[in-house]
Length: 251
Image 1 (cartoon, rainbow, N blue to C red):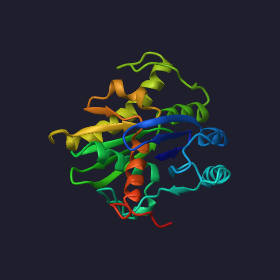
Image 2 (cartoon, rainbow, N blue to C red):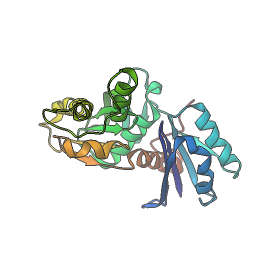
Image 3 (tube, rainbow, N blue to C red):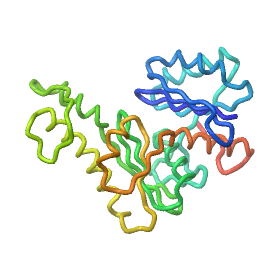
Image 4 (cartoon, rainbow, N blue to C red):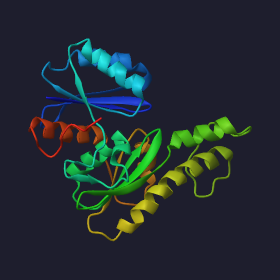
């Protein structure tokens, strides 16, 4: 059994995987990390726990502490030069965010064609993965909600907007929401455009903001709610295989 934990800036997602399917899953606010102990008490004692943490050292230490209280330890997942048939094209591979790396590993298990991998959360990341398993590079931009809150917090007269996507908005609420959505959608579609004529090319999307973006994208898109967790499971399986494609990354 494998427990995968994805600690993001806003949410912590976890899943218990039996090698074939998810047996249990859960989500909580990152600020409520202590409540993860309640879920951990029900995990099998021999489960391999793998953690991807981009929420900072305090959250990582809190996860380690609550697991230690249950006499468990975790393997912390970090980016490296290669993992599970994915090769890292970052100039300094270890500087790639662990969540982006896990999503790429998860994507490789689902798609063997050229694709872009989108993690739409507090930040939006858009990464290109070639059919040969090479991570080419990618971009980071503020997520949809972060864009809205930035306008509300840094301007005198703009609210935290709740509007709709319109082709030509005629009110402020719709203008803000349409602007923020078009920034997200445009970035995704722009990075997908070099792949548009490649057979089977698609966009794999995950993250809490994905449902807001999916209905409006003009590219082939596949929603994978647990893409990062799936990447962690692939990594954990390679560790269980004792010298498979991945080794515990150096830290």
